[in-house]
Length: 386
Image 1 (cartoon, helix red, strand yellow):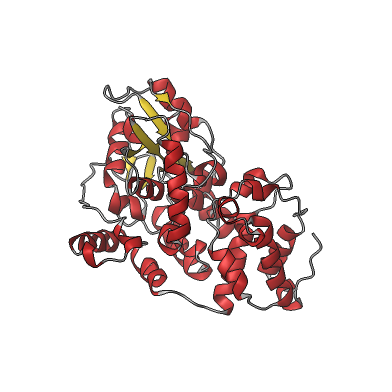
Image 2: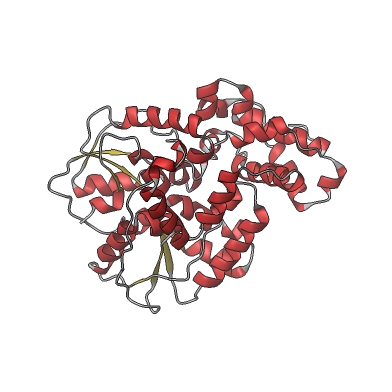
């Protein structure tokens, strides 16, 4: 793609990186075939190729395009297009640059967006607000109401700071589904793996990054590295793939030796558990598996969870369009509720088509989103292991 960026942007690191990514695009349009929002809306500007043109136009004119804001906000950041792209266009990174440019040049935030940024990255605050919201749920707006549920605090017995494995607890998972972390710790301890939890663990910064708050995201990430990094820790485990994909990218985003090392030592829980054997639950046989976009397109991990579950004795039912997003996408289900609802309905139709005993997934956002509309019980896949 021919690119002529504005002179002010060419002089910046972000401008040079945007130009490098833009030049890789060859206009082929393969990305549109696997883009959930393009498939829903049929609008070129709601597909990756159209959004690339919108970002290019802003960077060449050095002016914020409100039309670009609309269509970039509608993007799920599922990165399915990256898996499809034959030219290796780093669309997710380009989208970060575009959203950050818009937010810096013309900062506009809805009240809901500001509330999410104030609440979600702080697990105690999130747990309290969810409990409060559940008590007065008849007053809560519809997009938020469906996510409300009773939540409880769980004390997890760990092995101390000398453990070789540190479990990343995450913000939403620690607040909303703490039983998943509890199960993982018990599962590992039964296999003589010493596990450490950092009570001072910070937000990974992913929410701010995807909403164009680059500077705030960097502050969260820097604080998280400072809290988590230890030379004695060989492995950091993530069971929330949305957090994992962000932490694994700390090397690019922060570039410090500690960030690079932390990113290199971070593994999705499926990568770590593949060497162990497990038993299945006797009352569960058929599983419909939803692999989150952050795992299959972000971390490029495919097939591991399937292998572990099948080896454990589960029957994985066939799921149509398994590559497509469920519509959760972090804050997307709350900020773009109409599109998210359509994607959820499509995904649940595929997951429940062959009447599984349970639906299993690998990210807390997908877990909560699918559970809000499913007729079938939804679980984190790790809890199926015994």
